[in-house]
Amino acid sequence: MLILFGLPLAQVLLFGFAITNDITNAHIAILDHSRDDVTREITHKMLSSHYFLLTNYLHSDDEIQAAFQKGDVKEVLVFESDFARKLEKEGAAHVQIILDATNPNTASILDAYTKGIINSYVSQKMKQTASIPISIGIQNKMLYNPQVKSVYMFVPGVITILLMLVSAMMTSISIAREKELGTMEALLVSPIKPAIIIIGKVVPYMVLSFVDLIAILLMSVFVFGMPIQGSLALLLAESLLFLIMSLALGILISTVSKTQQQALLLSMFALLLPTILLSGFIFPIANMPLILQYISNIMPSRWFIIILKSIMLKGVGIIYFWKETLIIFFMCIFFIGLSIKKFSIRLEE
Image (cartoon, rainbow, N blue to C red; front, top):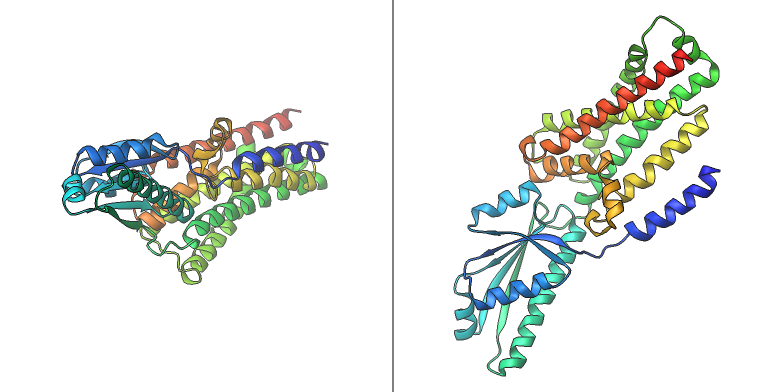
């Protein structure tokens, strides 16, 4: 009954609110070498729209890379020196749009929004002054993905979905099968502690999932040309932590499932749709309703995708994503602890 009535309602809500490519309140930074009336007018015109939200003003070119590496901004707008004077005397000035292209769809949309606003300002200015034609040259730069390949967005998301679903479903179905056969009850009444049972169930699947991870990474690099700019050892360590968390989640699902069919349905219902829609894999989280943004915070896939992109595309170290690592670590401890508690309750019963 839950699947029959709950799943369609959940799908309508998620697809209706989460699936959108419109961008609102995208965090940007501005590097204004001129700081004159014209650059302030263009900045005000951008921020008065609902597309952009100013995070901070930068003071030098050296701060641009750091802002993108921290993940604070999606775009940096750079005005050249003497912007207003060049526009007035020479009839032309230049601005540079630098974008985080780890998500090429978002980068392309933000680029189009920015160019549209700047061109609108030029048209409005020419109508007001009725003077010689003026133009603002716009140069865009796509960081981390110069060719704007969509595979750079899809590969980290697909890796996350496969690892999470395969790991969680393997463990949940395996233990549910033992419940159906009655062998799990024999384990629970044995002198073995629940923690040892759980570890014994997790370790074999952890090894299999890690082999699966290596195969996926090799295919990503050699078939799809996905780069690994950062530390391979760090990537494997973070992936191993995510695998353990996913396996622990599968154990937890198995504790509330009486049959393999229930475990499979719960895994698909609780993990598949939210992982795809609420992880920021395809659709920007910032555009979703506030309630869905809060729900996305409890999705492990959201944080792991950030880690993958930071290592593979940005080439940064753990100092830039230690918060995401801690979140996954605490989720792992929580799922393992709750699974052990559930097994203990069954043992007492």
